[in-house]
Image (cartoon, rainbow, N blue to C red; front, side, top):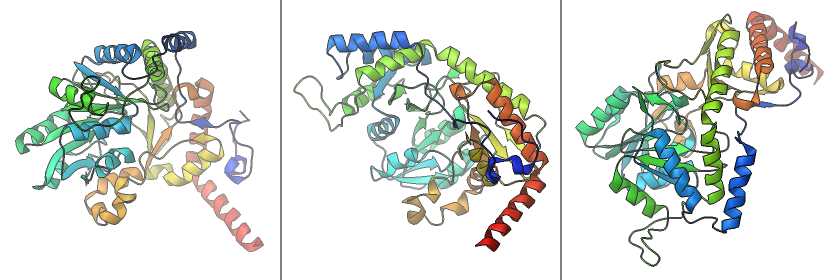
Length: 409
């Protein structure tokens, strides 16, 4: 880590060495206790049972169900396939209402199965699906609602369930961000018909690659288990259409190991979050996403909105950060509605998504987890403070450099 930045010319954007020698990513994989992980992997290798719903997967499913307080956990090979299997098991058809402010997999899981994702707007305060917008998007073709607990902050579960019940719709949730979070004292995983979890390596809890569907509906759980294994019920009896969505034993071993240290991981995330909060408390125009301290949360993401008072646009700040090897991310930009094929299929969708568009142009997610420590967060805080204080000088210096480049060419 190099010396402090005292003037715009000291920024890496203008040719100085970067603040950090190595890139700081938004998330870096956690591996838990390596000795325990390797012992489990060795046990898998010794058993010669590598997949097909082996003992490690069964143990992982039970441990995760117990952690969430749900009746059924169906582990699968990734979170996207978990969405697809759940959508099919719920017999969703026609149109399903989703937020555009989400990772593209949420929409693709529908479109891949010839179901139209209808993009509803978000509540600007919660950043989650707006029940009022959902209600306005319902048509005779609507079969369901797919809510997303963005950044671990639960949706308006009660309002969405009321709409679903009143309009005869299925309600499910993409909870890829929300493992370990609660809503009104109840763990995420217990809402709607089912909830989807992602255990991709970039998540604070992962299984290298994997996912799960959790539900309290036993009949649905049976459909999900059949669907992830080609529809087999027994060795030679296929009773329905299915696919190969099974989690393997080594991934389950990683999951069991990660669950043992999940409290420590969340504690680390929280410490990072609180340090960021302290370091940017006097930086104008940076609004840190807040959590309900009465609920459990995983503090997986450190998200800030870059407001006008900061003095620079979000994307200019992003350029400055990336040049310094702080690899902040724009979550979720530009929104699913502005990506293909949806941009071409629904060219007017943006007209009903003002809050989605506004938020997608302001948000940055910062490095956390094991990717950073106190020194790194303090340095990022000083950088943000410097940029905010000298935003006018930075704009002028940038303009001068651009003019010089044009004249020389």
